[in-house]
Image (cartoon, rainbow, N blue to C red):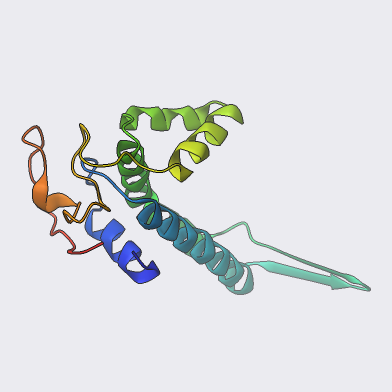
Length: 155
């Protein structure tokens, strides 16, 4: 899965917490969020911030991060659902996401799980997104209802 397809997939599965997400889908989307946040923070500082310059120093900050704040709200649910689907790919429940609340250890463990290879073949959360079966929403197990959100074909 490439960068653009990953972003399209994660936004089309906006609040789809069932199924599985490949490593590439998750990490390309994480990179998109990271880079977009940096760019929007710079734009916020430029448009709404205070810039202080002096001999050999430069400081820019803002107390009103309008654009990056709106972006954060817009990508919260898609990033949460991608993280849960990535945990599903490693055959773990999405409830493990709450480990991020444990200082240091929790996020390190989650990063290791998100970076590890998913289970081969079908697991209790659905078909392998890399197994040539298309992954995604088209072939869910009987335990899950199909999403009303249109699925994105291909991986």
